[in-house]
Length: 377
Image (cartoon, rainbow, N blue to C red):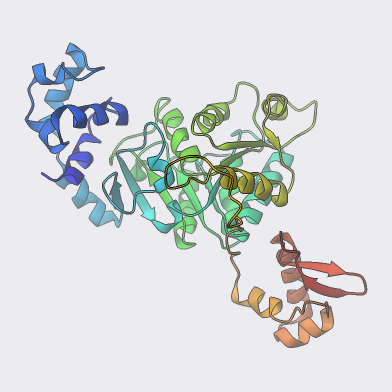
């Protein structure tokens, strides 16, 4: 049995997490060796008592990696473990990374610069619009938008990213073949079709429950450079993700809302406690820029200030029509009618595209009906 096969098998053992798996690997020299140990051997691993040792030994005899791999092949799902090159580097750094990631879609989306957009399942109209706007703008600017595919803020954030033709990653609270909520199945397919991914750490057949949803939150924040809370009451489960993000040294951002709205009370509490207030994409970029610049490491592992290479925005996602319009915009400014003629598109289409390019910060409108490139940060 290879280490990869061992991880896939161990991931099927109930109640066995990353920290205990690491301890077993240290104790027995490899993960494949775990399947040959006795109950008394397991009792020597810190954190494993008699009941757990008995349970683990019983499940070690049952679980097989081949079964999961066969199902994955049939469903076109990729299984990525700690020992695989495709495992997300940022997620691997957290205290309890997933043993295995079940991935429908692009592996590349898991290693790109990502920002999580999270919040309540019962948002106001303002919250829905704001989440969709941030999803659209972040994805359009080249960031990957991470969220949990739940109803409410999660759905709006994913939908905004899809609308922008950008990438988004949905982290499920159950297995890929137990997608919840079912009404988001179409959205999940759109996410994959746009170059994003729908992922889970749970083996096939695992239904979501009250335990799995909080557990998946550490993956949402673990994949991301920062977390934006759009709307959240004070007792919202969203704050679990915030706590995970803080433990993982991620930047926490919050969107202010109405002072009399219960849906925004959690955000206001976070802002009072030091979360970064964000209202625009530029606010988000500034916070992520500061985090990435401040946490660059030198060869010895010491934190240093990055003064050599500036942190740049990810490359914006552009459609062919957007590129055609942008190609007509000159540095000193170009009249809109010239942009229309040069692009070969009708005026109504160009005007709509100019709005999108403004949102992506790639152009700015000048007096006199002229268009110029966006300012460089």
